[in-house]
Amino acid sequence: MPAPTLPSLPRYTPAPATKEDLEWAPLPIIDFSKAGTPEGCLALSVQVRDAMRTYGFLYIINHGYTQAQNSRIFDIADAMFTQVPEDEKKHLVGDFQKTGSYRGYKPRQTWDISNGVRDQIEQYNFHRAVTDPEHQQHPRALEPFFPELRAFTEHNHFNIVHPLLRMLALGMELPEETFVKLHSFDGPSDSSGRVMKYHPRSAEEEAMTNNVWIKGHTDIGTITVLWSQPVSGLQIMCPDGQWRWVRHIENALVVNISDGMEFLSGGFYKATIHRVRQPPADQAGCTRLGVFYFCQAEDDVRLVPQLESPVLQRVGVVRRFEDARAPTMRQYYTGVISAYGVSKLEKREDGTEEEVIHGVVVKHYN
Image (cartoon, rainbow, N blue to C red):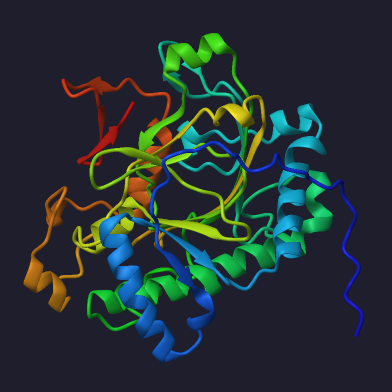
């Protein structure tokens, strides 16, 4: 049977991968071709457990999308910026301070980075259901691609996040559906796709921000899936306290633990600090296009440790707040999103900046 004809759109051609000799983070690579059987899932759970305990980040290969499907998603992502008129983008800008959700467009120069310099990042967040007008109005230019975008969010949720959640549960000696039950696709949550376009900055802005494009932070949901792309910029704080770059691997995913999973796991899994900085010299002036799936637990899930875990009973719980004061997933993410990049932060002696969201101390690392 011939393949269906897809709607046409301009091809996106990214910059070549850097040839600079950078200090790369030694992140584990997980082969998801083995995830389809109970035996394979159990074997991978050991690798995933150790990776998320040590680095909070890992790569996934053989995740079910071909290179052609990968490239097509980046074509659609680029179209969200290049094929949508500016006046329509302005009409669809999300009021994240009011709603606590990033759905819609975020224009450049919304967030304060440092020393009065504001960001140069365009962003578009889309609800995972994509086609339901109850959740979100989309640009007209995206309508032909709704089926592909819905297939993309479902693939991330069911074929990547759910297997990972099972492995994370097994790593804590919990029933494998423990975390999956908290992450339905159709239930109330703000799990969503995102595209981000990082535009180059002036030399003066780079000097004033020490080349940092997004300050060091941890993510707010449970699992973040980044589709690897060749323009370097992402760095993670490694266990020895040093920033190291995340290398591009063709058609791989870069996955990290977020705050919500750290809380649910009682600190067993690590929400790792990461940042985005100016690309290396041979990619200077290049635009950086990112494609993500941000997964969150359902809105009413209280972010308390799974104390029935035999592992937690052995190693102990690391809490950032008392269980009785634990926020729900919705309370936490709406609080952080409403404040991010616009609230006044308290500077500490160690150079970090802090704010308190529903009793949780949230740090930013510059």
